Image (tube, rainbow, N blue to C red):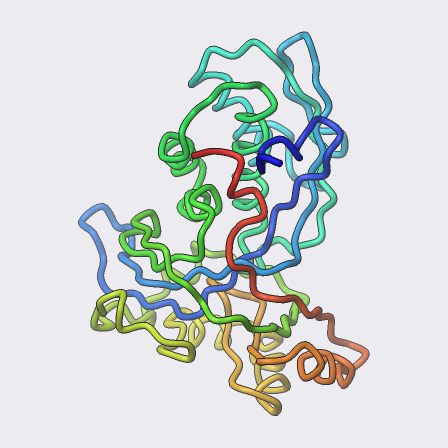
Length: 285
């Protein structure tokens, strides 16, 4: 079966989390945007989206997120931007089962937006190529393009320059500190290191580097530090994105689940495998 043939209006569309296996700030542009290098890795856990067609051209959310106006929701914005870019007059009702925390560094909102672009490009039969969807996604946020790209990737620039990387199989323990870390605050911090020497993509190996944002986050959010300290008892632990979530990698599922079984009652976490590619990678070319 053609990969695109398995996806229909009745399907549940995954929006997987990402981990930054390393994240370095290598400079800053004149416009204030930071220049990054990172390795994006998709994992087999995330939000779930469903779509219902509408004939009136309206884009609506079945269950708006608390505190987020629908017009500001990335899923709504993605669908409306896709309409505007293509002249599509079809509408849709979007339902999101939100499993990833906001402000967690797992790319939840960006992943949701990318899934909307990929799914509606397919369901509305628009036929846009992947590269065009990546360009549309960049207008929504710097992390959206990699989810549309569909491969684990070495990223540069503000995160939009992508090179596919084959990442070895791994299982991850991911902990969710009960705080929402504002990305803008972390990047504006005067103590953030912005001069880590850049590397060539081929230099990357599992375990390489660190997260330049981590020191800033743990100084401001003690819960991030506490979760890192606990997880580091079992394996090297680091923060993903600008936080708050932290993770460790393990070769075997049973080893990862054994660590999760030790999790204190006041901590939340989960185990997921690393994915070789995005589950919707076959929806466009």
